Image (cartoon, rainbow over all chains, first blue to last red; front, side):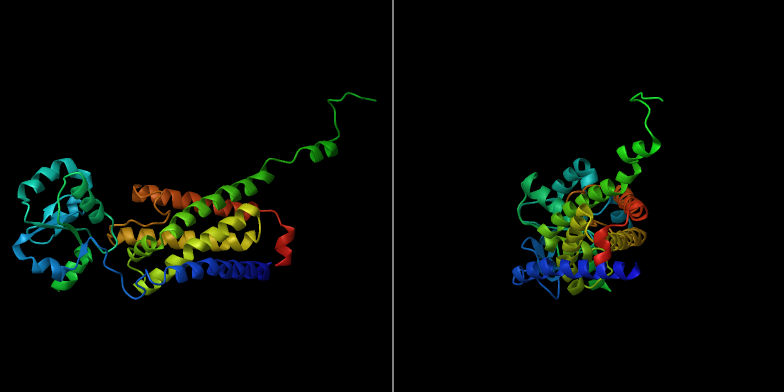
Length: 142
Length: 161
């Protein structure tokens, strides 16, 4: 019985490799295999810092996390309190500003969602997502 | 001699009607298999998004996350198909149960470490669900897998592989 289980498991594990390898070959030129790639709407920390005072930092994490710690001068704007926080953020915005949104890490979705809503609903231009998020920023400051 | 059509021998009755519990495991296996095929297909559709979701757990380095993102969805699909059709069911159950245990442990660990989680466990289908809802679905699927495991009947094709 145990041998049957082991054989079946190995066959299924091997079978799944066939389409997996096929898809990886198909995607081989579109994937960054050794480090996460930067998306077109993302900026690196160095790039954002090079904009100096024209950057408007937007923290898309939950309010409790923002209150605990955030990038200096950042404004809180998350989807849970969108209607309440958006007017405060827009009061600080001006057309020459570069809006850089961040959430906790590279792969959290909140910053991308907030950036998209700022572009589509508030009609803002020059809205970017910080590559690496809060985690990348804190690592660079250590 | 009683010739009434309403009175049947117990033996005849047993042959006519299978106890309902015999259908529980195959039906549950088909439902869970279907779910894994669906969730696996959602993840296989966008492997780069899934690679980011794996990376979000902060457990594996990117090179491993991106390679797993091309493999795990297909493993779910293959095992889901095996469950639905009853082929190599023991192997499929063992793999899917192990995967669910890993998903649940990683999700809880991420929550404990305060990671803002878009776990990607079910592709984009459950993107807006809370942590508790994700965990409840995970545990429900795990319970279903265990029920199928303990209620499954020996199958002839199990003996050949």
